[in-house]
Image (cartoon, rainbow, N blue to C red):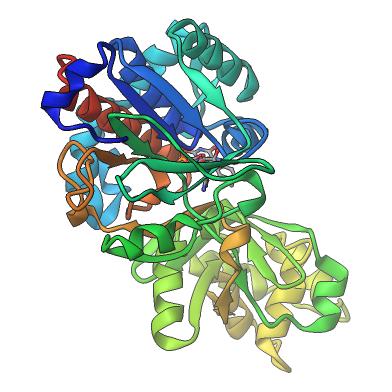
Length: 415
Ligand SMILES: Cc1cc2nc3c(=O)[nH]c(=O)nc-3n(C[C@H](O)[C@H](O)[C@H](O)COP(=O)(O)OP(=O)(O)OC[C@H]3O[C@@H](n4cnc5c(N)ncnc54)[C@H](O)[C@@H]3O)c2cc1C
């Protein structure tokens, strides 16, 4: 039924493609293929598509980043050469122009991140789905993909029904990773593809929080509070950011940016020590000088608040690390380099994104699975990762576009 050999295609004048997964990667592949005159059907397990995309909209929908491409591409680590070939086809500027065509203007925030002016995802998704409908794309929600039948046709199971084979000349798999599974991407595709001989690297949390063995009294008092204006260092990288204190540890943009290296270190060594500079705007000498001010009968908290403006959870954090010592030089050293021992990663279910996935060597440059001719894959289910900052959506959109053009080329529609 699926992947008809070229000579059989004439049986059906209009080539047909199935897209499994209606996230950003799948919808982009669908748009490219439908624009080239392919009849496209999208199947998604959930009652509606783009649920993770909509959740990303709650944080303003950071679509991409405005930094120069030389810097942008480094965000994909050692997968950069492959991702660069996708971004050559669909760059951050292309993404902004594409959004503008849908009537969604974008702007560059102070951090260089790119957001829609409305700061949410729903207007973009609505406009996009209208465009797909105009292009003749059919959407089947509540249809879970369960693999392939004996002839290689994708099998989808409608809610409450039996699996049915889909008639398609090519299939794009865009099933996402395994974070936030209640939004649809649950990683259940891993077993299906592994059984077909496709090499899939273990799915692991990316842009995730970490466990810290907090002192009970400290966290009872400060759970949910932010630590702002920090410099965070690990493995030779230092960056500015903020953290959120949780019952089990830490979350937040600052630590997400270092999370790949921290996760790898914890997997290797059992734990990792993140170093926090609590007053990055002051030099070590300035902190030491200010703490030389006689403390008198002041409490520890008042002393560090009045001397170096440490407030909120910060005095407690320093105090916990200092133990019995309140010697100014020791306290100053801790304020500039407070070690925070991370004992584990938060589970993938709560991570922003997923590392691991289909090994990139399993794919042609057009993103077709070498072992499954006519089956393409895109988005977060491929083995690449990136920090937050718009790099995830950019990678999902761009790889979806490449897979879509791959199908267009294969089905002889000129891509
Ligand atoms: C809280 C949060 C905030 C985020 N914010 C941002 C941000 O601001 N900027 C950014 O760049 N990235 C952000 N991301 C990441 C970004 O949303 C994802 O990287 C992106 O959605 C991945 O796109 P995708 O199309 O590969 O997969 P997904 O968006 O996960 O879509 C996969 C689709 O496949 C469907 N599916 C899965 N399995 C099956 C099956 N067996 N059968 C049928 N359908 C199936 C799912 O229902 C889903 O619709 C955020 C993520 C989270 C969790």
